[in-house]
Image (cartoon, rainbow, N blue to C red; front, side):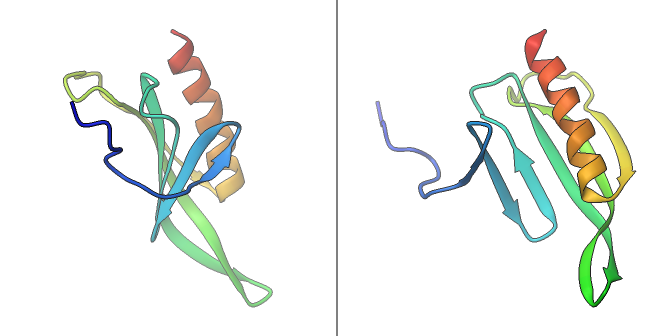
Length: 96
């Protein structure tokens, strides 16, 4: 059996779980849990010369590829609101 990780490297950790970003897509959670949080920044806005996320789509996705449960999803204004709701959903989903 191959014990090498599929993806190697260091990740930003938040509350003990990896938070990974590639371009406008952010994934939070451990693949050993039943669900992970997936966020996609759909639009940006400029505030005081700084570009920040405006509309963010959030989804709770199963980590098991055979799980056919439809993902829970929503679109929120701003990253904080999206991440906050996504964290609540993720915690509830992984608790079940």
